Image 1 (cartoon, rainbow, N blue to C red):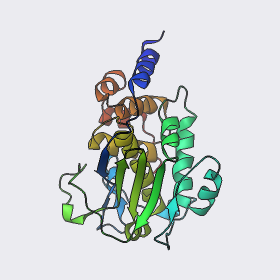
Image 2 (image 1 turned 180 degrees about the vertical axis):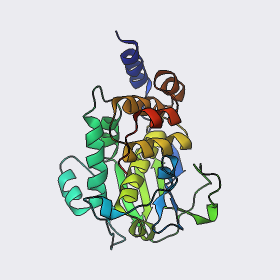
Image 3 (image 1 turned 90 degrees about the vertical axis):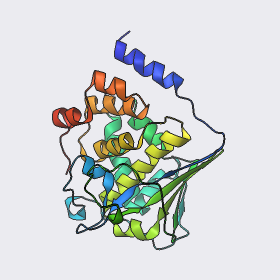
Length: 248
């Protein structure tokens, strides 16, 4: 059997979803001070990233009702996507990654979007411990917490600041959704990769054209095996240089 395929199967078998206890994690950080606030994750690839909806076919999603609650299932997925452009963009991008040969990453991310994960909005200011900053010179005073993840037994939820959500362009909104789904895999599925890896994975998915080598890198990183990712594919900077054809 091909050594890489064997490693994938071994890691998938060893990855077991955890149900016990209560855990939480800081959500996506958003940088204010640019022409439009942007998801911090994107700065891992493009420090000068500007979020402009005019580059895309999608417009930003505006949440007017703070009581909006989304529990995505395959049955209502089309309806949710027709009503919320950010979900549609995020899932459209994930579906492009799913077409890669021997995809072991995007398919699980698509599944992780679904119920029992619940998405809701709040008017409250959210706070979280300081997280990884891709550019050390960024002032933390300009970073706001856009979302917060909670796991309580078999209940999984993402709480999003309605105000910050409405401030964002659609690419940052979609990136925030992917970020929180990766957080769900990190905590809810007990994959336990670190914050830096989570941010970099979000940036690769959202800002690079799908590529089989990036997909392989993402798989190992999101299974908390950055050592295998670097050994088999390369480090993050090498992956960007060799394989990332930028979307924006």
